[in-house]
Image 1: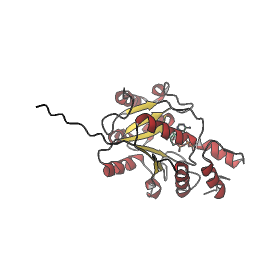
Image 2 (image 1 turned 60 degrees about the vertical axis):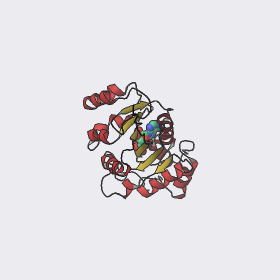
Image 3 (image 1 turned 30 degrees about the horizontal axis):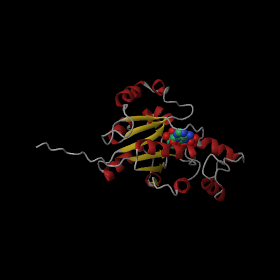
Image 4 (image 1 turned 60 degrees about the horizontal axis):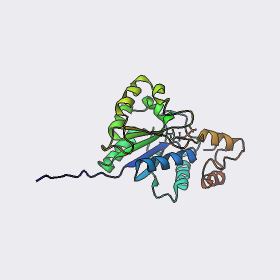
Length: 228
Ligand code: ATP
């Protein structure tokens, strides 16, 4: 008798880390479009505490988390996770993914990022081991197209990119280890742009949700560099 064993495919979780200083429509569209394209059960937004690669965020982790919660309210696929802002010391994605892997067992994890972030991956702590913990899903961003991505990568990363690039769309069958690329709606929005507009008193309306901009206004954030 032929015994067919059906593989149980657990729903994949997307992880979107960032400073979210503040969160804007570029982040939200990236999460929505990748969730739809890959059939992710959830996307978890994880604001970074103390980032290793860049200047300290301009406002506190508590404010950035609140803005994330406000921005994703009402979307049943989106959730927020405060583990990095609670953690002492520098926030490493490697530590976060290790914790999530322990908590979630064999569930596929998809680390979502813009092509600009992927280009800098070799500067991340234990970057080669990230592929043992999650798939990496790369969305294009204005100025960082997917066609130019391969050429923009340092040689060590390019080799891994070509080895791990998944041919088929969707979440690969394993729970980690592949690279998936995806074109998304190009939104030339950055948190840097929004902070600069707020600092000079111009309106960033329609670049981020109104509720986020109301939160910024109520709490007098980003008026100047001492807004923490
Ligand atoms: P900043 O301007 O302060 O550097 P940012 O707008 O780039 O911030 P981050 O919080 O650093 O936002 O980004 C988190 C993730 O979201 C990164 O992987 C980044 O590539 C991606 N991302 C941010 N903005 C966009 C956008 N407009 N389109 C596509 N991806 C984006």
